[in-house]
Image (cartoon, rainbow, N blue to C red; front, side, top):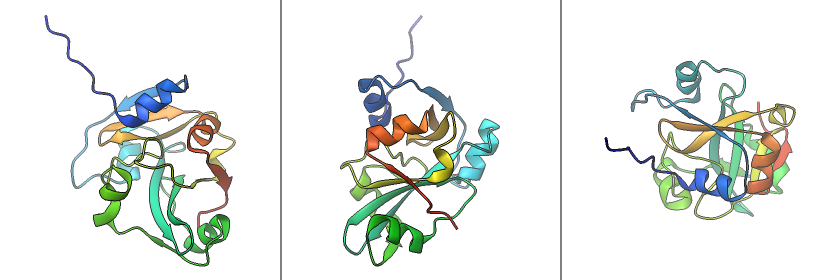
Length: 160
């Protein structure tokens, strides 16, 4: 019997290197169903599914926002929190070149560079949150404080 080797993502490798406890969640995905709401339905979770968005500030360059899957990023609040005058979403065509991740598999952990990272304050009081593990169909559940530590992130009010 041949054992199938599980390929670890950069996000999982970094979490393990920091000795952070996590739980993997795998799910079926398709090109038409990549939204955080679709992931929440697949996993049977609603409250602690968070999505990773990448924006660009006029002063700082790329920024990472981690917000509840069923909410929208407030670009004005993001600009204020990050010390920018203006923030806009990174164009989808630039996502992989900037972060190393593709749409539907963008994790706040393990990007090409460590960008300024902002978690919505709603995550701070949760025991765990679920974010992408860096590949479509794979999520990791981890304590928000551990994610903030590994990304040097901040908890701020950034949702509409």
